[in-house]
Length: 367
Image 1 (tube, rainbow, N blue to C red):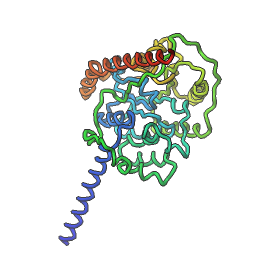
Image 2: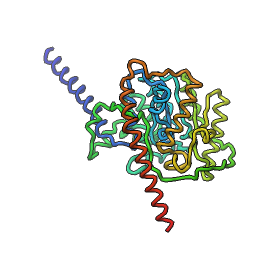
Image 3: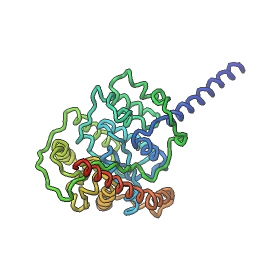
Image 4: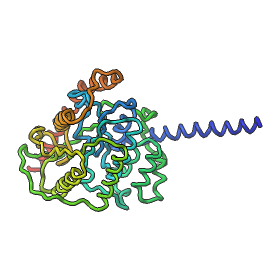
């Protein structure tokens, strides 16, 4: 009997140690995933039930909202739970993941994925951005959990490929530059899910509205939207849907038309909706300063302007507490100091430099 107990104990100890090492080496070997890892690593570092505003969206979102600006202006504890190319049917799993550790008083959900119509198709897991598969933006940032496995089952249509997503150390084991600092997968970050983006476009500082008509969203995407709304209602969550302060451009009429359609649909369903494009002048957006990759991505200056307007809107319309004088938010004060004294000025300087480099390239092309 003693021999049996000893053998069983050894097997159990081996399984526990192996599982621990497998999980943590998975985090160590995962690649940066174009902002995804640091965004979600930072979220997992937040003390339980300290985030009052959770933002869900894609790169359009995390470049538009700087949570530390909300902290400076209103003492709002917010976090951008966003990834590059967040798929429409990832959003309800994001809500579930957030609610594991936080009880936000307000969810802000950007409809940009529905405007862009990422959808989900059989070939999606073959699409790449650099060397990284698009689907991995959506799956690999999450901790190993049932919710993550459920998300993988939802978005990876090819069942034969799911194993590589379930246990992604199989995919990343050859990563030549593993990051040992990721051992606990909870690295705090003063960015709070924000990222500044490279300047690759500049618009004039004056604009003219373009004529658009509401453009219906596909039946499949409307089904996904209704599933998202069901998830919201199941948790009795307070939600503000938003459209970012996009610059009006003719070649994006379809996306803009989808935004108009979705605004009508969601407000008819009784949901709050803020179209930040309708407030470009109040926000103070400038085409030559505040846009980065395209009409719906933003530089640090655009993010600060937009966030200040959004923060004023939230403070007027929602009961979100000012946490600046409360115990338990000492980390936020330290991270705000880092943001204000280092991160913000460095990002402003970087944006000025890459904007000038962009201007120089355009001038060189015109010669």
